[in-house]
Length: 153
Image (cartoon, rainbow, N blue to C red; front, side, top):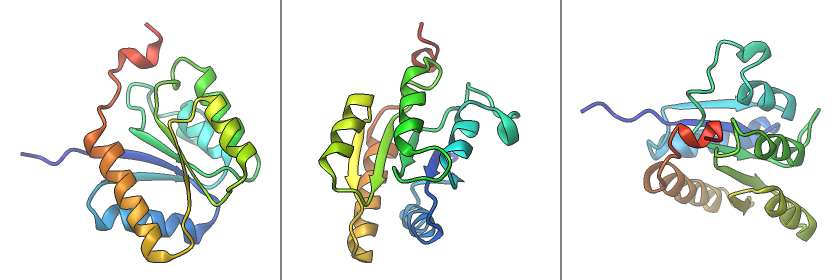
């Protein structure tokens, strides 16, 4: 039996946070392929199969998007808005993973259609535990939306 390949789009501009997240997911063997976008513009290019990602196909969406809010070029809020407004990406689960504890961020994200909102713990061990729990739920327990969910049909 071959292991299932999971694809995660991690949108994180802080290299240390990105490395910690990738390490925690790989340590738990939850992800074989993790794409890291360093800003909101790169994330949208990946999701909408354009620019450097024009060879990608909408038929292979990421299983989940881990999204920071405070990003250069295009904010996490705008990435979330663009994803949820487009029928090709609306069904992709989005988990905000951010240091923000501002209620307005939480409210806006849920109004835009985020699937989960997690505040990053400052403690390294707690951070790894949060990533492990997140990964187990979204990549093992949760059912991937069928392809028809992405086309709006």
